[in-house]
Image (cartoon, rainbow, N blue to C red):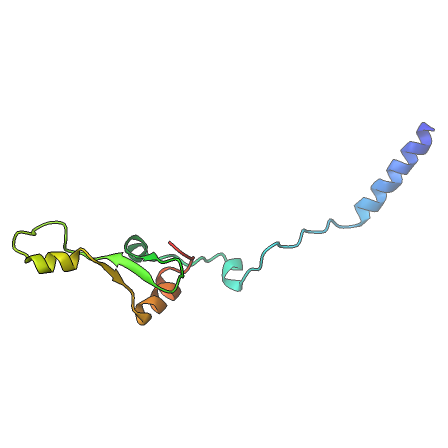
Length: 105
């Protein structure tokens, strides 16, 4: 019985040695850019300043110039600087395509 089991194991080994191992299929789609080893980089300045809203179609940011040297500024100007700024359609297109290519930040 042992010789019969040994013979079966040897025949199985011969079969597996003749067949090349199949590589697993990719579980995600890739483009030529990713396969070439290049990844787009997010613009770090835009990433620190802009946040996308839940819809993903508009971005918002805080306005600059509200932190210091406020004595010389009028109350109207300080109130205007404290509000949130939203992107227009041209800015939204540029932020989506060029500055923030990898989703919502």
